Image (tube, rainbow, N blue to C red; front, side, top):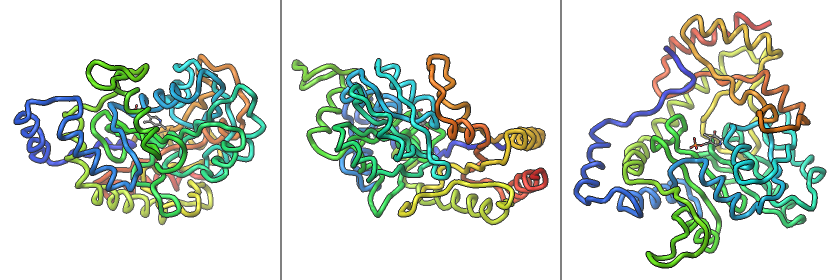
Amino acid sequence: MINVTKTFFPPIEDYQKHLERIWDNQWLTNNGELYKELSQKLQDYLGANHIIPMTNGTLPIQIALNAYANQGEVITTPFSYVATTASIVWEKCTPVFVDIHPEYLTIDETKIEAAITDKTTAILATHVYGNPCAVEEIEAIAKKHNLKVIYDAAHCFRVTYKGQSIFNYGDVSTCSFHATKLFHTGEGGALFCQDKQIYHEMFYRHNFGHDGPEKYHGLGLNAKMSELQAAMGLSVLPYMQEIISERRRVCKYYDQHLDFSLLSKLQLREGTDWNYSYYPVIFKTETELLNIKTNLENNNINPRRYFFPSLEELPYIQSSNCQIAKDIGERVMCLPLYVDLKDADLYRIVDIINSNLK
Ligand SMILES: *Cc1c(COP(=O)(O)O)cnc(C)c1O
């Protein structure tokens, strides 16, 4: 069976070596040795300003919204994973949907200002499939209207834009280290920010609001990453070069062999050093997508309709303004992409797709 992705498992000896350190320390969570080591290694590897590893990639979005969005209106798009919109609603804010750019698939920055009202407090935009939003234009809009910018950068591990980590843009960026993501800690994630003061604000929020054992800085919850998660991260991180070069090989194969006269692909924003995190293709019609999906499934190949449906169709959302997001969502599908995906399997996938395109 070939699925859209396959979790990377480091050699078990590597993981055991880190587990032994945990047993030696007799320390499982709360600022442990492995957690501290992983924080430092990730910060260096990514070239990020400040990082707080967390227990998943959704809590940092909620923490940032809790700190900045003040139960106001948050500008976002319906072309993302459900966690983006759900976090806004969970934090008692109101999502205001702005449509996406038809080629970059990120928020259309030219439509943001029309959506701003006096209740708007923040912009929460996703760097879709690791493709950066128009970060400079968004920063200018946010400055002009005094808004905070939070990026859902769940897909962006190791992405750089104009020579800098993409996590260094916006007031806060978040990433996911879930098992299906490029780099993982089983479950996990991180919050990134640009200065020490914001780092402290976010750090206490993720640890019950503690400022020392008997003092509280403010309201907080528990989003701490444990030593067991950090052990997985420390075991996976040394393999990133191999993981990325394998994924690059698969993407190159698709680039060279799919029939792009009848199919379109993601347009990367200029200045991006991408991470090969997903391989979305956009069909001419949903009917064609469904036909090809069935054909692939009949051969035990499982691509994924990602992102589908548009988040405007969630049961707790009332709007339906974003026609481009809806239209692309109905026609986009992510193809299998992971380390070890064999050339013979790639050949079959491409053959099934090309021979059913019209
Ligand atoms: C995976 C993902 C999340 C959620 O991350 P978790 O680590 O699973 O909580 C949020 N946003 C996007 C765009 C994602 O792809």
